[in-house]
Amino acid sequence: MNLEIPDGLGDLLRDFTVAVLKERPGDLYDFAVDYFTKVRDVRKPKDVPMYIIVEDDDEAGEPDRMAFKPKVSSGRYARRQSVSAERYNPEEDEDEDDNIIYPKTDEQRERLTKTVSGILLFRSLEPEQTAQVIDAMFERKVTPGETVIHQGDDGDNFYVIDSGVFDVLVDVKGEDQPVHTFDNRGSFGELALMYNMPRSATVRCASEGTLWAMDRNSFRRIVLKSAFKKRKKYEDLLESVTILQNLDRYERMTLADALQGRVYQDGDAIIKQGDDPDGVYFVEEGHIRITMFSQDGTETDIGTRTTSTYFGELALIENKPRTASVYAVGRVKAAFLERECFERLLGPCLEIMKRNSQLYTMYVSN
Image 1: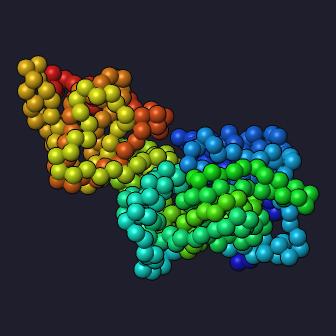
Image 2 (image 1 turned 90 degrees about the vertical axis):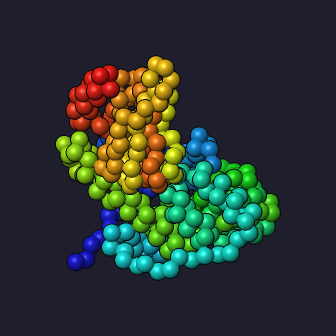
Image 3 (image 1 turned 180 degrees about the vertical axis):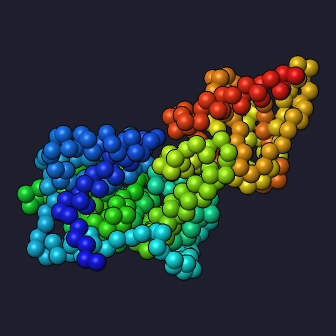
């Protein structure tokens, strides 16, 4: 089957991705409906999306789309077609090659771990995957005036800034216009790898600096494929939770994308009685122990739970402090849903949760 990619599809997807990275919506599907409705109503093409992610999400921005337009020469245009046609589907990727490891000192690993943990793309990765990201990054020294990436080129690497000042430039009528400056922090280059699109801006070094780079294949294998695996894993977990069987496929998928993996060791307090509620937890692996303090200060065990159960919803439903403590028994893996996502994403199940919480309250009061 010969499929032709419509003109403008790549730009449309890039613009939408930028909007998602800036707004960080809790419900991606509702956000997409609103976004594309506005695009249709305005009927103006989005010419130059900024693909930059900075350490501080509030600093992420886009240039004036009416003023900036990417330069496309005849030579570049041929490459644009070939790159856009190349598509990556993590579900079809069965390549399980050994992980690439570039040696690093303990100091470099510690510094890079801290930097990577603040980057939006990597926040949902589990510790093992974060370690793979750090292993796969290689060091690149740069000098003043050196161009790291050039607008219109194919995407080869994703970059994390270790040190140095970097200017972001967009071609406007044949002249490079500055639209952003990185000062010793930030990252860039991910969208060209995610969507196989040419670079939408030029990044040039303004001082001596150091970058950590990850190649296209490692980026896809670790970031994109792990995101797919995470969604599938959490969808399977949610399907096993009886209370969530009323969710349709898209609701379950949205909920899976919002979950964050957390790991606890034996004896760790997952939640503490009296604390303000921060979210709800789903037990992925292991066992938990539930306790309550009586009026005389004695802490008493009131139950245990295991895989495919949830806890922490009572305080959210009643908008009150935690009424019990939960401890890990052995190693526990849990999927965490933040408070602001709870009511919106679990709306179809909220009434059942309320009934269950009332039964729980009656049980502990007796």
